[in-house]
Image (cartoon, rainbow, N blue to C red; front, side, top):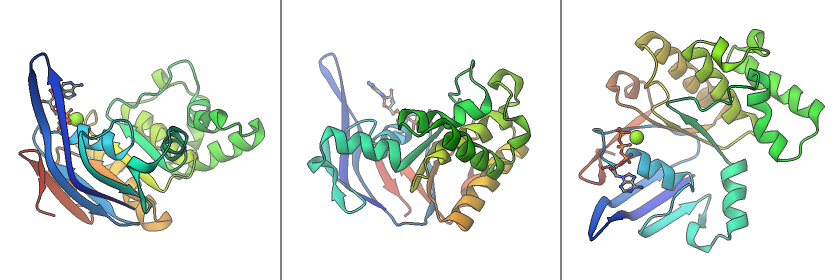
Length: 222
Ligand SMILES: Nc1ncnc2c1ncn2[C@@H]1O[C@H](COP(=O)(O)OP(=O)(O)OP(=O)(O)O)[C@@H](O)[C@H]1O
Ligand SMILES: [Mg+2]
């Protein structure tokens, strides 16, 4: 699915350069369910943003779907971001004025998919996360766990090959977090979606097929 080789990322703060990623190597195959663990501030989100083409490394080699990232045009990059990758965040990031179904369909609206087809696909993915009976609810009328289910449906709507989840259970209690993990496990098992999930919770990481830990700007324990 993707490969990272000797990825470095440094931020310049005034006269100081702070290196956050210090040579990350990672090889994620199609169909994997990988957990990334690591203490707060160690660079997990920074790495995730690079994997998701939301940010660029300072140096290193990134190959996605067999193509080196440095050779991709801006158009190709946004194409990958929009079509191949689905994002799930800790704070759900749903639009408060839209219903669950409208939130879920939004990525398809941007792609110019006709309304009828959008709604059909939206209901299909809402069913997958067991939220079809809440399609007309707005985020404020849903629990945290339900909002995260809708956010997962939105990530799924465009049929991505990779889902990147940055602490998707961080704002949820343990039981609800486990239910969200159940959804990821089933998507991975039944639909073969490759999933990378950042978590602080070793109990969730252990349910993934593989887990790695970030430490000192590198990935250890592959
Ligand atoms: N735009 C930025 N400019 C400067 N420093 C940054 C920037 N973004 C992140 N950092 C620094 O990079 C480090 C890693 O941040 P990152 O968000 O990747 O950590 P994290 O592992 O995801 O932490 P958490 O578990 O708390 O989410 C932090 O020390 C942070 O201050
Ligand atoms: Mg983070």
